Image (tube, rainbow, N blue to C red):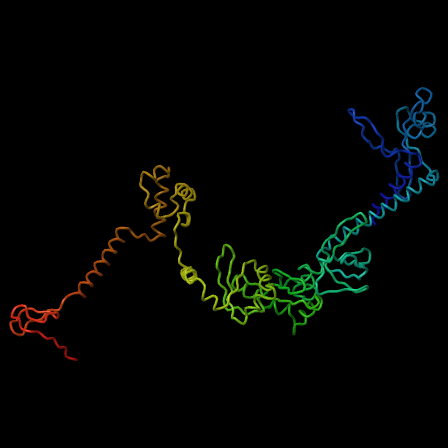
Length: 489
């Protein structure tokens, strides 16, 4: 307790005793604008502290002339002659401080002062404890099982009592009287009975705090924790990364022969712990997040909606999903993506066209193709906005605009010329006539090939020399019978 708190407590105690001794009410009723209101009554006492730490209390009284005006209230007023005995320079209307002997306080006033002192000291202690524990939210604290009520466990923390609510207890755990309990300070609240320290053993930060205590590399920030997700009593997934290239973040957290991980598992009563490496590539991160399952491939279905598909062998499907889907649920939370899991056979039965489109997108990912005016490098944003407002945001639509339509948009000639140069530089334009000519040429070539194929072979009649074909049985000129034979090469 600070000196300031002690001074304030002593001052409040003496003032309460003075008010009770001289029966000064705390409030009085007055009529204000026709309404009866409770108005606080000021106290005419002053407490002074000397340099040698002595305490004195004085009554502040107004000087009046008793012979002319009389004294209406001796607690607040003093006669001029009596005041001049204390101060020869006293005048009517002045205020004078008159020492009060604490021995004059009666039993009831002393009792009230005692209760006030106890209340003040209790408030000061509660405020001090609140300020002290408020800064420790998220830290580990150790206490002892004291009692249980309605599933909530009350823990003796020494100066104060903590509460471990049932919702903050792991289903794997059970405690008995005088058991040692390690928990995280989740919240600190003020109540009518003092302060209430809420503990938790299910919060992800509880695992973070234990990991910080067990792994020196996490404590000195060599290994950072990207995110922790947890299903209390079942599994916890921790994504870690290293700030130094020569430090393996997963190996540092696991420890030699898993000794560090085993210490965490023991504290969590056998809860499974997956420590995996954080990766900026979402596909690799998703693969890691679905451990202990082995993932064949991860395909991004929709990057904007953060949807992905994980492909696994048939033998790994149940392991990837986990009991009641908990493994994939935790992976979803860890990577902040929506993950769908399929086997190889299920993946092969999916929409091939969609897969082809994704493959094509990945194949041509390096080639920049511009479809809209706003996508062109160094384009004037005002020009792009004007064209967009006139339904000419696409380059194809802009090219088809007539001079009259462009004039209606109030674009400057210099702006249009700059835009045309950008289109010539970054966009390959195929003219419609050229395209149609190419189509016609292709059609002509196809037609020519057809005629060549359909061309009939002609021969000469051995009798008269007239022209004959393979489908004739008699010569049309001389009428001789015809027969065609093929010789093998």
